[in-house]
Length: 451
Ligand code: GLU
Image: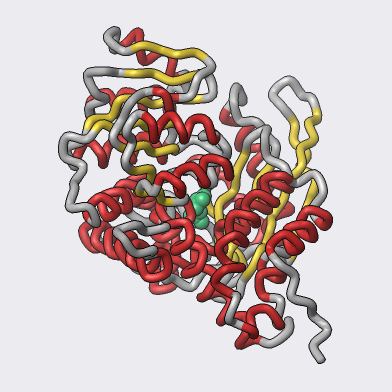
């Protein structure tokens, strides 16, 4: 007789909570997946008896380390760094590095868990991982950031490799930080390999990697609208965030004929009733990335816009919404407001921006709602293409990559329909993404036996 007992969803979640105390983000991410997977597994004895979900929800390993660095005033600073290697059943661990004061082991475990499903959905051979530090890049000089990145890599290098674990950027980590980290990796190991993605074009990076997450989220949105015979032409869009994902999502919305009304940062949101045009998006990119400014200053440059301090943009009526800032930025009440105001589609550019209440609200309203693990997969997908180009020691052309990104996003959309079509014209994209991602990883794990 099998000794494994078939716990139900509640029993399973009780165990997850007990084993991961004080890790609410991780528990939330597992719960969102488990809600769908338990249903799917009902008649699949092997997944139960082999404890597949339990195994995916236990990272292969969590590496935690001290990162010491010296600030410009000569003070010794101590930060905590992590790499969470969640699952490598279908390929080397792959996922970004986040530098933000909100980073904890819980946040990185949730991100690595999500990444496992997201990467599987891309169809590329990548496992799931995530790393980062509670280092706050805000207000730091370029030299301080360089010293921090070097110190971070001085520990991280021994845990990563082109066929082992391939980190990339995330919040607080862009091309500049990837450069500092790659430089240090190369210096320590004397090895020029595709160990990081999001690299500069001169040293092994891929075209369109920067644009890919935001563009991909809009391609996914367009795919969802197409199931209703609609396009983005003439639609109003509310976007949160003003970083790489948000500005490129805005750019693609504008290119496809939509009107972007908002952008935000941690200080509040700006509402531009005239629409945020390409020229204004370019201003935001320069302002946020190069001048490291605040979104608040947008209203001085474009006076017809208003700034709403300390608020999120979800109360602004819109046809479509794209949360592109961070986790749990769109709560149950916000979801209700969006639905009440007639929002028809939500495509997540950030990772887990909608809390569980919000997810349930969107599902109950049966609107077109794409979870980040499906809609924001474009970034890591182009990272996967960067890995291929590095292995082949070649670079693909921009048109080729644009087409591959579009195809990958359509492929993910098809997978969601395959497992999420509820009949009556309603597609549960959360369920579709969870099941499609899970199945691929689970079947690979079954092949390996108990490891
Ligand atoms: N940080 C991005 C994500 O959340 C990209 C990861 C990567 O390119 O490896 O998917």
